[in-house]
Length: 149
View 1: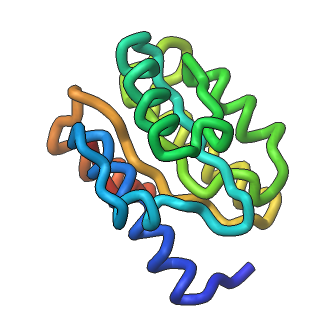
View 2: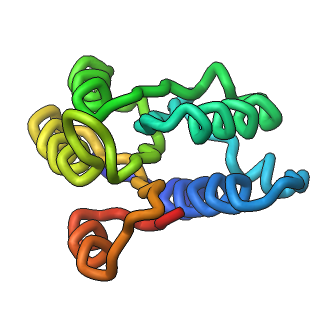
């Protein structure tokens, strides 16, 4: 399935807006507009730390996107959610690297395989972690991770 250059730019802008939102306490109107997803796509967040989940919930609530976010508290749950979702359900994956059961890299590999098998486009991927080494960052980028928070 092909996407237009405009949709690719929008996905890039949306991921950048999410990253900016999570790193700043004040949400500017232009960030709010850039984060809105086309075609009703949702955001998958795989994060196991309660504090981070609550922070993300508040951020998405402020943006009016809380109902567009699916939270998973471990990597295995995220993999199951991706496998069970329709082909184009998610427009963005926010993945923690260090999670129970399956880490973010394992989730990413499984997601890529799932999208390949069902012929759907891989959503934009952003890693959320304090544990990103340069080696891990390079491996993740090779698999398509665009941003790191």
